[in-house]
Length: 75
Figure 1 (spheres, rainbow, N blue to C red):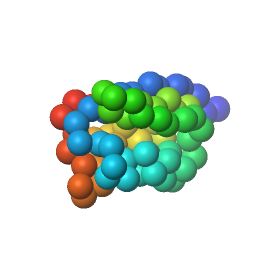
Figure 2: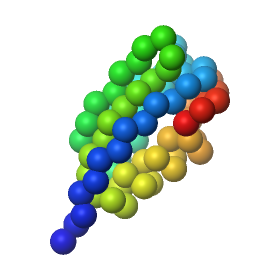
Figure 3: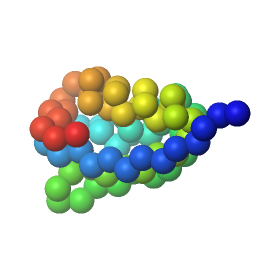
């Protein structure tokens, strides 16, 4: 049986106007995760839900491989 988990994340830094939200969507889709992504004056926020392994991979790559013009100050 697959364990389903949910994670909320906020990313601050240069994450607006650099394709970060589409990157989050693409990454979540790659791992079969459901959820949503948005932004506000402080950065990008997202909530994802799916397999524990998928969420773990998503969170790791979110910080390790952001879009080229992004700069993550605080994952």
